[in-house]
Amino acid sequence: MNFGGNENSMLLLKLLYYFYICTLYQRKFSTVNYALVKKVLTHIWNFIKERKKFFLNLAGALLLVFAIFFVIYRYLDSYTKHGETITVPDLRGMTTDKVADFLQDKHLKYVIIDSIFVFKKARGSVLEQDPDPNAKVKENRTIYLTINAKVPPQVKFPQLEDYSYPYVVAYLETYGLKIGQLTYIPDLAKNRVLGAKYRGRDLKPGDKIAKGSEINLLLGDGLGNTKVAVPSLIGLPLDEALFVLKASSLNKGVIVSDAPINDTASFRVYKQKPEPTSEERISQGESVDIFVTQNLSKIPK
Image 1 (cartoon, rainbow, N blue to C red):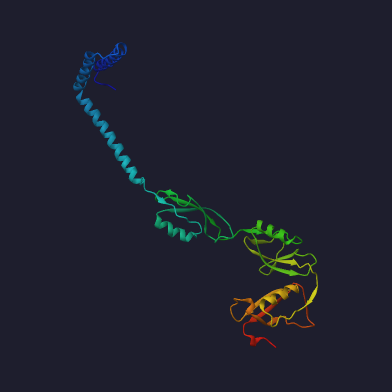
Image 2 (image 1 turned 180 degrees about the vertical axis):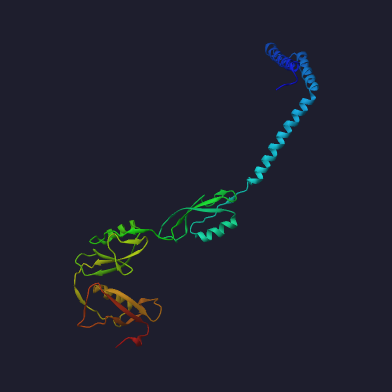
């Protein structure tokens, strides 16, 4: 930087030299030569007065730079809304339709980045979010969502026949399939899987089925083709009738009541299907439908 030619440069060097001499003097004699300091300060003052215009321009330039930085800082502070934050709401469990309306009022946006299928969760609902709930963010921040797929993926049905029921339960869970109705049919091996059905059709290994579907299983009853007589349940309280069925290796079927059942002991059987006969015998594991009432006049005598 040119301070006004060679003369000014030499004067500036002299001023620096005076400062250096003052410093050496003070270090050597542990005192201050006030005459020397006065001389240095006088030279500095003369230097400034002779170049008043230069220093005014320098001061103006510094003020201008400061003003520019101040305006930029205030603009950025206003633009980014420094210190103003929004608490991220908990979106988990909400459907994407509700999320869109909900975030619009909060001045937040969202983007779906992934979808997986969890059959215990509502389809199309939010499973995960980033940032997490209760995090502090700026206005118009984007929240990234992982949702539960609306259409479950297809899986190949596995080989289940001849495996035991407990093993099949655990095995189907790994495929994302659920156990539906269990039907026992005559077979010497108890709880051996003899077949599987989905919505009335037989399933074979390799069939495509939607994840989360309920599979109905055919299981061995462990009794083979043993036949038993149909016991008479007429007139028995409901809880006793169920005990008799269990003792006869039969299952309860549909229970039909003419009033809400609050106490099984107060309801009695007035009709059953199949009806009890000395001639008719059914296979163990079959079901018997029961009709119950609190009106004793309905019970045949």
